[in-house]
Amino acid sequence: MLYHVRMDVRLPAGLDPQERVALISREKEYSQDLQRSGKWPHIWRIVGEYANYSIFDVDSHDELHQILSGLPLFPFMSIAVTPLAAHPSDIAVAV
Image (cartoon, rainbow, N blue to C red):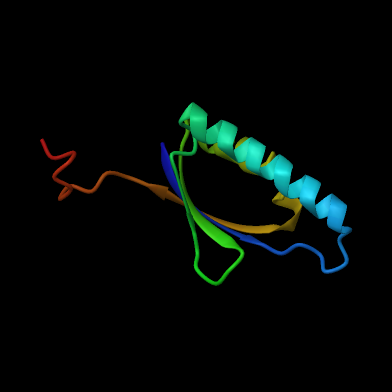
């Protein structure tokens, strides 16, 4: 199942700088492991924002929820999820 996910990050202004670096490092490691596994095949930065658009390829809504809630930055995120389906005019999937 494919999902389009927008993630907006809002770290607290008073977050300890060392804690911020450690948190972002854990986030990068977690997300890159998911990318390598094929679960997170695309991620794009939204210019001028601390946000991204991503595509996830997972087996279920529950799996996506587990992945997103496992993000180290999850407590500081607003997330919008849109399930995706094949479009009948897409020449890549046309029969």
